[in-house]
Length: 204
Image (cartoon, rainbow, N blue to C red; front, top):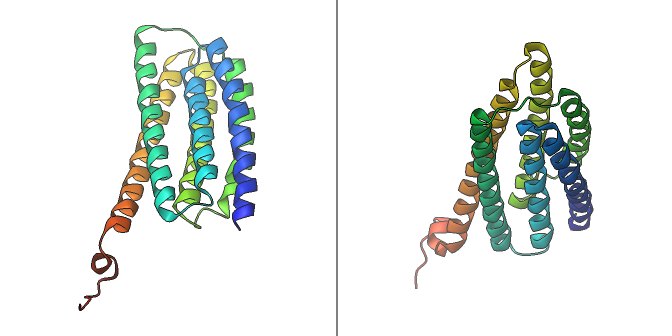
């Protein structure tokens, strides 16, 4: 099972690392906040999967620590995307719709592969669960990018790109808080005395 998880994590790590460069470059060229947000999500996921590989053969304590670090990365990325969206409000640039659409579809296909690879292992432990959660968030972000591109085309407005970027950041922040809460609970449970963990009284 561990070797299977290792293979899956290496595949999704490679996909996300490659797509970060592709989508990040496209976001800069197209002046799209939603593409940049999705690219940052790819970078965050690559880091997450890297940490997951690091702790795969380690104890539950290390897995909880890694999940805590993942949550911190997700929180930082969410705040970064939100800040970029606010910046775009005061520095308006119309995004390139065609680039957004093409790269958005490519990113969606890449994340669908990651999602189904991680789906079967999502309930194995906190490490794999947090990895799958990141993949699920990617799909939400990809659909948001495509919706933003369609709305920009229909409305001839830059606001859908900004709104979607802000919504993606909200998804990041919510997931980050969820992962942080679960990892902190796991660390507290591991650090609690045996009576607190088992509910049994020990007689000395």
